[in-house]
Amino acid sequence: MAKDTVANPKRPRPSVAMVSVDGCRLQMRSDPTEAAKPQRTTHWRESKVAALETYHSDEHPLDPDPDVPRCFLDLKRATEVVRGLGHALPVGLEFTDEGPAPQPDQPEQAGRDRAARPGRPERLVRSVLASRRCADDFGPMVHQAAWERNFFGAGRRVFLGDGLPVNWSIHRHHFSTFTPIVDFVHALSYVFAAAFAGRPQAEGAVIYVRWIQAVWSGAVATILPELEERSKALGVPPEECAESDPRQLVFDALRYLKNNAGRMRYDDYRRQGLPIMTSAVESVIKQINRRVKGSEKFWSAPGAEAILQLRADYLSETVPMERFWAEREAQASSHRPYRQVA
Image 1: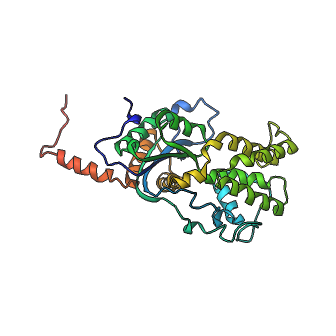
Image 2: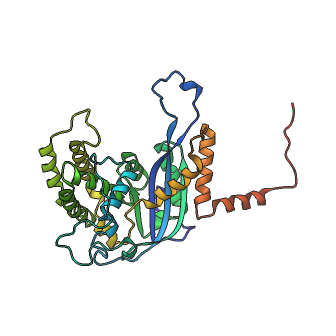
Image 3: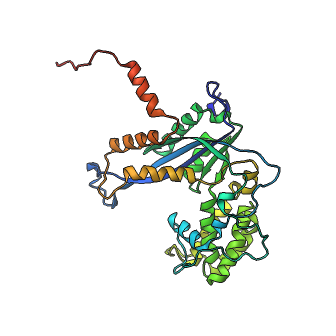
């Protein structure tokens, strides 16, 4: 029987278990074998990070937080968040004043601060994995780490990621019994860009508020017809279209929401007491970057793998470093090993 169909009897059963996978980058030393590959114009290479967390939360008969938080309606802040994700925006889109966008026909409690959100799950324990291994190798590593913590025996299980196909390949092959959820903030970035694409800011703000409330409420399907009509009106983006072109922004948003609509039932996830954002793994990546990134930091292949795994263990709350040193001390003897000289 496969490990993903049984619990680990040696570990307690978590109430809620979450696995989230994302990528980061670090600079690698040039390999002499790559000297004949002129297409390599950068030292940046991909690595992968996974955050595994347990939570305590209650289940609810109805969505405990039906109104989109105020922080997502602050247009200046939303612009900064979207740019921080590296997502393209219409040229010249800037907001100088902080504050919520116009909210016509919304109840008085709408747009509450995120800190006051009811029903948010309480994080308990986090463990971290990081490696330069490819997805085919990294997936089993995450699977094993999840099994050791009895994530497959949890009452509620969730797999969080952005829209990259490689993340959902790991989900499909190793975490198929986990509820798949697309990060809400990544969904917001596409909706935000499409709402303002080719429109005056005042008009785009009204549309954005309506669209993001629909996404927050799990009603993504209700805005797809509008995006389809908008895409037809603007036209199909040509092959050499700029990322910030309104045609490209609307086309990308429509494709993203269509492909991931089944992973955006955010109202139902909140009712189940599940996390809906990849902030955990993104926070971990920032802490890893503080160690591995720098203008003069270039890693060898063995050094990069070692520092990624070491940093991940250091950031884990399951004390792998303490266990390692305790086991090493227990296995130590009074004899010092020497190499035999031939």
